Length: 197
Image (cartoon, rainbow, N blue to C red):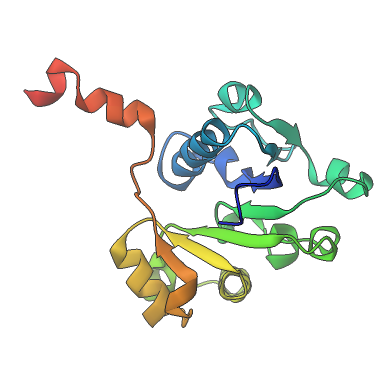
């Protein structure tokens, strides 16, 4: 993460959370965004979404600690400082989201510190099952190339970290492991009496 002692303007790309928002990558990226916003309220949190798609499941909770913005709004607001961008997912091949969608030119020109979450590399490890189509294979390849260029990557498990280093060829010093179960709601459930029976 960047130096969190000085107030920063941080853009969290939550467009992946607009698909299947109650599970997997979308659920994790929303939980992580909430934990970060609540844990570091002194920073300015910008939450990137796309109005063409349904709102993320926890949009109201997120709105209480961050400001929702679209790519068009951020591009037009040339005075908006963005110190860091957190990409919640590099691979949205079924929604025609290529590298320019994930990191558009207007954002690259602002030169933010690039931080990314790596959920897994399952499609890369099983290409015949997940990357059979040419378009999907090309888009996944673009996302993988972009992921390799990021300043820091945060894998959600030791296994994902190893895969990112071994199979994606990322320098081990740039890949860190974070707890995949960062959602406080899940932690609270563990302490309920029904959870122990």
